Length: 361
Figure 1 (spheres, one colour):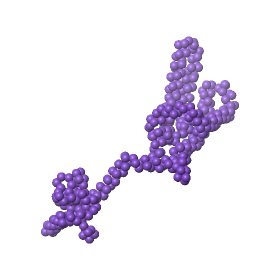
Figure 2 (cartoon, rainbow, N blue to C red):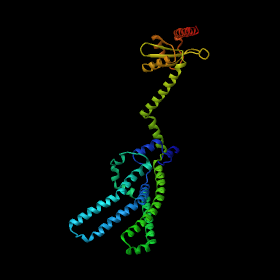
Figure 3 (cartoon, rainbow, N blue to C red):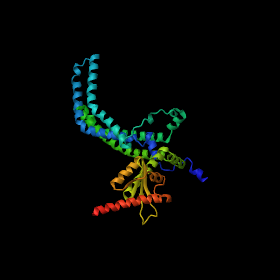
């Protein structure tokens, strides 16, 4: 009974690295739209502060130009068309930095939250979403309720900030009728900047809370049941690719250890074509010579190369090389091979002694 409860549907286990990677491949990551909104408003505010003098100066010139030429405006279709094109062109030039900023901030706000991620899986049609029962469930889910509450709170806060700011400056707004166009526009600019600054502060606070909640929500969604953990472990353990990778790494490590033994060996027994057997014998610690390295073809050539660099004798003896190649790596040579190997080692020691004598002479 205890095992049945453990393998139930309750998600109590932290997500594995593989599960996190699978979610990321599907585009299911902790991302808050409020962060994008807050970043957008903040950068718009910064642009507004630095770009505002030029913007309002150009806008004042545009409004004054239109206002001063109203006397010659006849209201014909051709005049309306030309005026419309002129206003659209001039406003597009003025608002171009803002449009460019919106695109850049929208792009980098996603990278800021989730890093670089390109996947087409979220675009794959999911016909289960067309199920009206599932759609009804999503409509009244906890996530939908939280999103609705966030939207209502955000609208109420922004509305209250705008109202309070305008209300506090209402008396100043009453005298705008007695001022010129430039002063009116500057008043609107100051008021808009004040409202935008307060809105940014509120949006940053909402974004921070929502971002933390999104990470918590995704973490809960990625959690696994005990049964899912067991199944994932079995799947990874039985994956032929992973097994192959592990085997390849093990073989590479064993080969490196084997090659490291060659410089301390006594002799390399070879045949002319493709075998190399490395023998080591220490009379004080070994009962019989031991095979410390062996290989065929490419590995055999590598063994010979290392042996030459370390001045290890290479003795060609095809029958002995073929028989020793069948012996396990790290094992002592078989008893029936003692005489043949002893003769080779005696020859090697004789060569070493002759070399030493020549060096002394």
